[in-house]
Image (cartoon, rainbow over all chains, first blue to last red):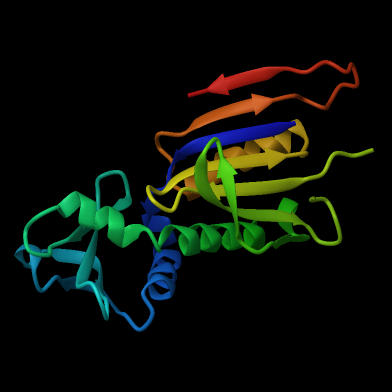
Length: 140
Length: 67
């Protein structure tokens, strides 16, 4: 049988360590601080603050659903768009981190490996594909 | 011949939208895997579509959508 799951990725509190690693990979040379205030954006207290080498500071605060919301402040305009742009490099390493964690913990995936990320066209949309397949076969 | 087993994660790097295809596992494992992925990726708005059961040997297929 097959399943198709569609939805939007959220950064879950349970994957805090994976998110921190994904942020480090997304923003090389950045500094990640935990449980600290942002230096801007009303000096909000955040669970994770990322000081990027280029592009300013990002803050992640846990919401009532147990997911992290991202905040940034750069000049006061285009907040949501700036967040969207800032998060673009984070999704791939985050999803790979979550998938690797699943492979460690799920006995059904014990003999699986992660392939290289490839760019694919999905209904006219450019997407990145990460495949988990059985070692020595099982994929194509 | 057994169908290939794999999990594909399709990521839209612009928006963080995801499509995940879980292929070739038994019904029970496939259900569990989908639930685990939904939870791990915090996909609260997710739509799950099941296609084609290969169990039972009757050659029939079934589909089920959850949203």
